[in-house]
Image 1 (cartoon, rainbow, N blue to C red):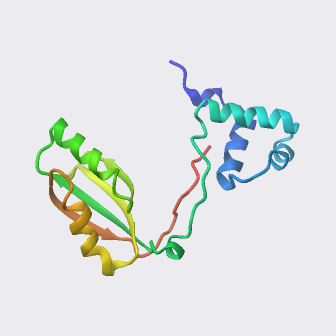
Image 2 (image 1 turned 30 degrees about the horizontal axis):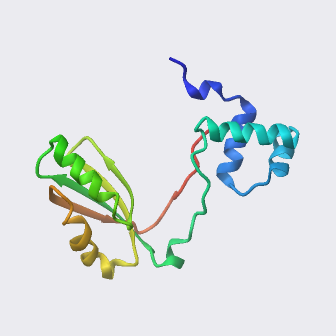
Length: 157
């Protein structure tokens, strides 16, 4: 089985690092930084998209400026750990716009939810309206981030 990372050469890796830093870099800027022609650079970037190394390009917003200044993490334990309960929970959680990420985990609980809300004054309403209404939720534990030390870090390439 081939490891897809092995298909990346040093120029591909540099392009991926540069695009993670700033996805709006022009082809000309990228070409100058990696030492290729603009055409060669454009072809490589298109291949990186086509091969799935780059999934999308989007803006990273300032959460405070869009009234999502509070970052919270919620541990969720389900009442049963059966495939149908997992499926119902997953189908419901993806519909919650406040939820940025949700991960099924192994350990003392079943899911770790990362969400952004305006501030802690709306936390109780969010918990009751969204989290506690999710299928199968038996127990939750919430942690509020007081400082974002390394948010939205690029992947090491």
